[in-house]
Length: 229
Image (cartoon, rainbow, N blue to C red; front, top):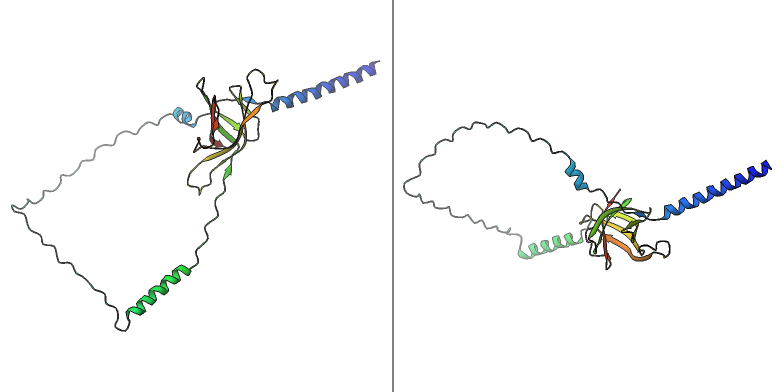
């Protein structure tokens, strides 16, 4: 009887352990609430301002020498006549030879091979996308982080953000920019377990131009702000 009880207890413990693993996995797949991202401007404002150095002592200056008095009458100044130098072609070379040499030089310049342009730089991938969202009804605004390939982040318990990629512009690009590929789902409040989320946006967002491909919704606006390693 004791042996049967021990076997039954072992089976019960294994079943409880397996159910715990399943519950933990399901919790990891659920979106987490958005948290305000740290602002670099606030960190700079919290730094103590350095004490300015004491003012330097004034250096005594010597008085300027006295100038000669101005003449009583203005003095007329006549500019020198310009010298014009006329270049003459050699006597043994006529105009046709000069034109031929100019044409040959122009042909050589056109026929000279041009160096191929360097290959374009490669954009660098980042691990975290920084997103800013606003509720147009309550005027609540928040800047939060979404990990690329990580858990989704929920804003206002309704919008769910998922980041697939985040990269910054290459050094040879004219405009410094941050680009993120985001997926935004919406789930009605209070029925999270009864309805599936509905996707309302999927694509690339540009930090330098939020209006190019931002989230357009009657209640919410969202755009990417930057990328962080």
